[in-house]
Image 1 (cartoon, rainbow, N blue to C red):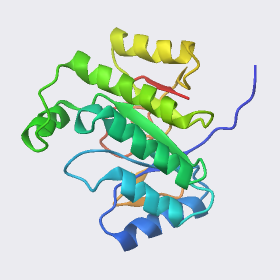
Image 2 (cartoon, one colour):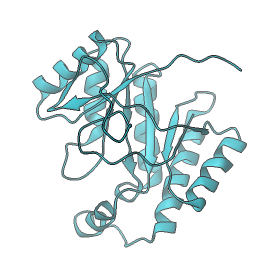
Image 3 (cartoon, rainbow, N blue to C red):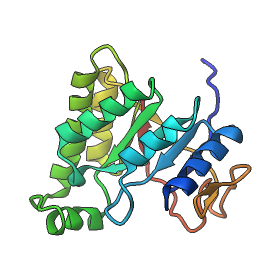
Length: 208
């Protein structure tokens, strides 16, 4: 068995530039490997926020946890992900999934996107990964895919089987997080999962 280093990630959302840059620098100072940000129209956009965080640090990786596929056209999401990977020197990790039901509703109501089924949203996530790999060429942007159910697991397995950078793994051990500041160490919750208070246990995920 090949030994791999165990990494910790902090997850948060920016309230303003000063707070967000301080969060990124503090996460790097405390030794976290990655700063993750969720997606949703109620939040600031994660991609420019993560670019700002990467620019304020030197070794900290940044990633989406996770992009909601109905909020962006696959080529656009892949273009932004590829651009971030290039501009950060390979420190960006794309997390993508089908999104919560409210994300699909908001994509129609607020963004004018067509209404989609669960299967169509899964296809959008799959297409985003394919578009990213086409843009990457020899570059390899790490991809994490949030999956739940046999169809999504089949997509993740297919990507892993074709060498597209997606491999089955346990859920990401997120760091304890409160009010935009990473804690000094990851804090396990009562249900046994690391992460923020009150958050549901993560779904199965695939990453590469």
